[in-house]
Image 1 (cartoon, rainbow, N blue to C red):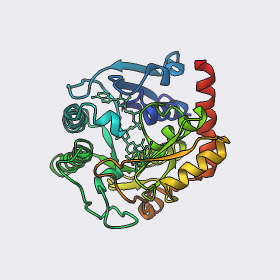
Image 2 (image 1 turned 120 degrees about the vertical axis):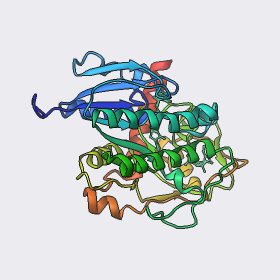
Image 3 (image 1 turned 45 degrees about the horizontal axis):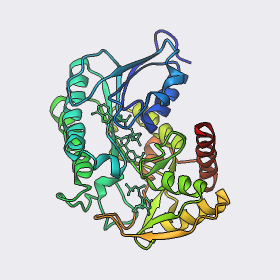
Image 4 (image 1 turned 135 degrees about the vertical axis):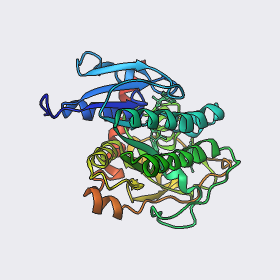
Amino acid sequence: MRNYSTRKRVLITGGAGFLGSHLCERLLAEGNDVLCVDNFFTGTKDNIAHLLPNPSFELIRHDITFPLFVEVDEIYNLACPASPIHYQFDPVQTTKTSVHGAINMLGLAKRIKAKILQASTSEVYGDPKVHPQTEDYWGNVNPIGIRSCYDEGKRCAETLFFDYYRQYQLRIKVARIFNTYGPRMHPSDGRVVSNFIIQALKGEPITIYGDGKQTRSFCYVDDLVDGLVRLMNSPDDFTGPVNLGNPGEFTILELAQKVITLTGSISPIVFNPLPADDPTQRQPNIALARRMLDWAPCVALDEGLPRIIAYFRDSEAKAL
Ligand code: NAD
Ligand code: UDP
């Protein structure tokens, strides 16, 4: 626990979302003051309701596409819808959140001399031609497709971070986050892990898009949050970008089969059309995170899936 002189004031944008709420918990548990800023587009008050009585926790409803004036030591910039159905719902707002949001948060960090971390994404690699993906790969991204509002918005945010670093010597950190799962994922955000588990628990068909041979690597939320905190605490001359994700790579068909086995579901598997620009493969090379942050994920998919299945079972039971 930190004392009065070592405790930090930390701003988390998107703090009421899936990853943000876990990060709020972690930083509060370490004895910091946490300021959670969220416009509740995809996040909910339920995710942080248990933190509200904590005097070290503060919540502000705010859209980061507008300027914000607060005094903090560190900023974790997580605000942005992350699932394809959410970020494609209002693509112009998605780009504004990444780009105007980054400009506002970088401007704030510059004014108050705060350290700032950007939650970037493996989507900056697009449909990668290099496998596994290393941070020096520039990516293969369609600039005009239905995923571009997210991919290009995040790429532009990375550009802004590095220009503020070069131009104003801002202390920046850029994490490229690969697919992460765990409790508090939005049950209807359409992401593959939540979709398959909800479908399996309801005995509904498991919807595989395409032939199911596309791959993803799934990181458990606690591992990811630990990586973000280590990155923020790393020496100032380490900016990233750094991949944070679990290198265990699975086809979507393998994931469906695991979910069926672990839930004991009778759901059939059905094959639906593949959405445009859906990446065919994705696996992080985490050598840089291992070396610079002494970080590697601890929770394998077979260990993490039962935890999120239990969470969704419990949520379903409460909803009845
Ligand atoms: P999420 O949708 O659960 O959380 C995003 C949060 O940002 C929500 O609470 C939402 O209400 C808030 N938000 C959106 N637009 C905002 C705005 N303009 N102003 C203020 N708040 C706003 O998603 P998540 O999975 O927790 O993702 C958090 C961050 O991590 C995102 O930036 C996402 O791009 C990044 N990321 C996540 C993953 C993943 O697998 N979860 C992978 C790569 C990158
Ligand atoms: N997917 C699927 N069925 C679903 C939801 C997703 O087959 O019900 C596929 C999707 O086409 C993609 C992969 O699962 O190939 C991961 O999708 P998700 O939206 O979770 O993340 P992203 O594509 O952003 O990595």
